[in-house]
Image (cartoon, rainbow over all chains, first blue to last red; front, side, top):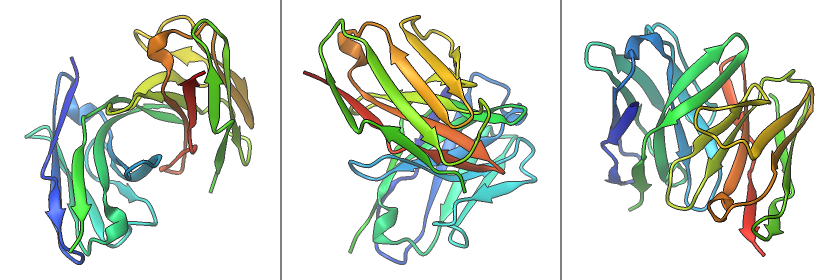
Length: 121
Length: 107
C-alpha cells in the first residue's frame, strides 16, 4: 500500500522559512516523479513544484519560483519542499503526491494527508 | 498556459440521479486529462486518467469521456458517498493545471 506522510508544517511569520518533508513507502520511490500540491482554505488545488525520479530535474509554479525549492533523497524515500520568503497567500494545506507518467499524460495516483502551513504575524 | 474551466460550479442532485460534470480546456489536450474527487477533510482521490480510464478501485458508475477540448465526468447514479468536489487536471511541459472544481451537493 502506498503511503505518503507529510511533516514540517506549522505557523510562520511573513518572510520566514519552513521545510516540509514527505516520507514515502509502499512503492519503488526512485522510479517515480513526485510533486507538491497545495490548497488554500476553502479554495481549489494548485500545483506547486515537481521533481523527476532521479532528482536531476525540478519544476515549479510561477507563484513560488525563486522562493520554493523541491528536492529528494532517494536513499531515504523522502521528498522535501524548502519554502523561503513566505507570504500570507502561501497559507495552505500542502499535499505530497506521487506522479504517474504515461507518455504525455501525467497525473497523481496517490496523495498524502497534507501538512498545514500558516503564514501570519 | 492551458486553462481548464469546469461547469457547473455547483450541481444540486438527489441520490440515484445522474450527474454530468464538464471540463473544458483552452486548447486541445488530446485525452491528457485526469479527474479527482475530494470529500470534505480528505485528500483528493484519483478517479479517471487518460480522459476515460477508471483508476484502480473506482466503481463503474463513474465514467469519463471526451477528447480535444471538451470532457465529461458522468456519475450514472449518485450514491450518498459521491457528494463531493470534483477537479479535472492536465499537465503540459511540466506545468500542472487544475480546474476550479465542481461541487456536487445533495438537493
